Image (tube, rainbow, N blue to C red):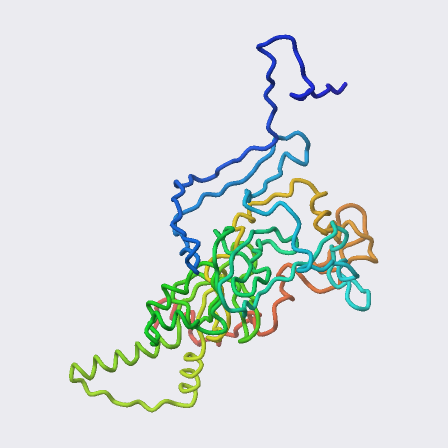
Length: 404
């Protein structure tokens, strides 16, 4: 028989010592790594720039729940107490409805399996291009059900227009961010004396949350929301905790070559002018117009210098430690179950049919008959290691035995 639960308000005892009843907490905060003491921020709201990013190590905080139910036993959630608890701005959203919600295309056929259902959502219209000039004040940080990273509601100081942008890790309400995609503002030009000073320009612009062209970002800076084409919004590194690193710029490579030639001229060495081939000239032109970045996967890519990028790391980096705890939460997110092929009928999957756990003695295949699991037939022909025919040497046995 289930025992009734007593709460502090409903429990009244005549004993003075038992008049107060401590309510049990349902969640605990587990700190997996030690967190350094938080330093007070020297942010001044009158300044039109956000403070530079902190470089201290931040511990991983995960909220765990007492196992009152089986669904709470394995539930793990990152702690984001700074998120907005209310609803989003209605005019910056539109409802997500239609057949695309269930993984269908325009003809109604399922093109993405295991999609469907889920809670009702509204799509947030996020500004990935950041082409509006002027400082913007961060009103609040919100959760976006359509993505893993958080979004920030910003208000322009010039036009008072609201918009959503992709939030950086460490961004909080009250910060001031700015976009330099339209160009360098006049007050920054005057402060530099009308001449571009790379050091001053980087110190005034390359701050967390600011959107800049790639050629204005210093080498070694962490960036996210990176564009692929000039004039288009960011497409790379938009997921939670992702970032890329600027490792080289074409202008700096040219300066290094010029410095090398100057040193050789000062030392008295004769410098022979080497005639470049057409391919070398094309490579030099491409390097001058592109910036080299390294993704988290280790991939190195050349991106045009006029593409946009935001300084910092995408918000919610602890999302990777999330555990849903039960299958029902996956259904709330619109994720349907995945059925194994061997559990299907023969007409539904190449592994189906038979008695028991048997796939009919066939190679691993997809539901459409394509070889899978990196088998021999999944590799293209030019990657297959073909047998190499070694020509037989005469008197090979005699030579092995030591004969001449």
